[in-house]
Image 1 (tube, one colour):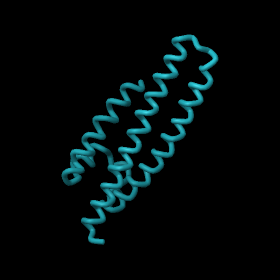
Image 2 (cartoon, rainbow, N blue to C red):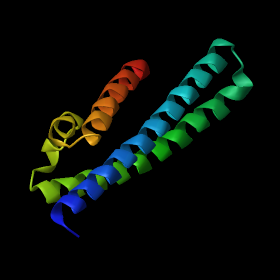
Image 3 (tube, rainbow, N blue to C red):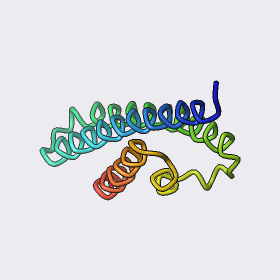
Length: 118
């Protein structure tokens, strides 16, 4: 595989892993809101189930993070860069279009979701 084709493949794979992780974070937000509503309604019989669901989604998030870490490591090796320099901001600057826009969108979305979780 030509180096630029390999780079493109690795970047596309990384973008896909970010999409998957975004879906899991959105699902986590949904489960957190659901748990909050159960608590606010004082529906004690459902509290344990609601919290179990949050824990289940946190497990999915840990799996998604592991997948993302592997994809980031592949790009770091390909670009001969330290792992900690492969950030969404760096990807949004260094990647070719249309991936540049995709990574910028991921950066904004993760920032927005992080503020919602806090």
